[in-house]
Image 1 (cartoon, helix red, strand yellow):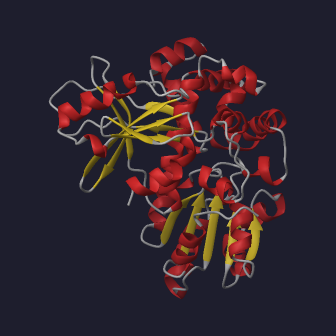
Image 2 (cartoon, rainbow, N blue to C red):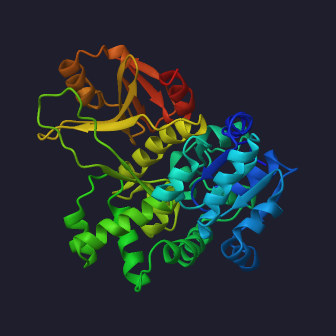
Length: 391
């Protein structure tokens, strides 16, 4: 088993809170991790029809069967349970009594979030991070291979080729998650929409343009984006626009939680095709941004990443917000450093007064160095950089 960085946080929270909520994409390793951390717990999965029917039709009896300690997997299938869980934990006050997991963000439901308010530690498990696979020595030296394969645990634990894994993943996702979140009558249209989202990886989310290309209404596009967010397929990186007098773009940018899925949706079938693909820069950017998000989630924290762009096109790919200020980061897929990479950083520093030594560039080569006092990092040392910036 690949050791997951979130494990110590889950254990710590289970000593403090009566309920632990762990959500994340399907196949991100939630069940394997929870069974490993809590082997003594009873385990119930609500994708089992008999178990689900009991939980829905007789929730009180189901809670009794859970006993003192239980993992309830895919709990979004029985929202009736949450009120009974609330009553039980309020009465017994046992730390770590219920471990709830699901491949949907069930906390988006207002009644559920109210039931768990103050009672649950809210955690998210995404696919493997680069540092997690580095720790077991299975990372290659070329980022294109990582982009192509993605970072779902099954690809590494079971050694499944990505060209087989992702089509099956999409099929399972559509059947299990999409239909349960929202009744979508034409799944072919939804797959087409998903492919169009992959083609917009790293771009501003323009709902009107996306809807027009997909042949659907803007309201439908907005609804489907919400489905993809709730099921941890995509996330929207928000723009940073505090304390600026200039006109700033306020649309979010679209990214996939796993870049390998985006590559598959773009119908890229080999690493050599990826090498010359016109989306490789956006896909590399997706990989790097997601690693910053994973780091925060693995610490049990909310993301502190943004991007910045003004109405003239000046842009910083990633802004990390810290208590003492903002850290600008530019992301370049090129394996050869070019001093033009510094242009946006210099613009930002002149605008904000940020010192160049508090500025970073991440690029596709294997070497680190300093250029014009700006820190230039190899993608292979990304984990070290993320820890440094977040320290």
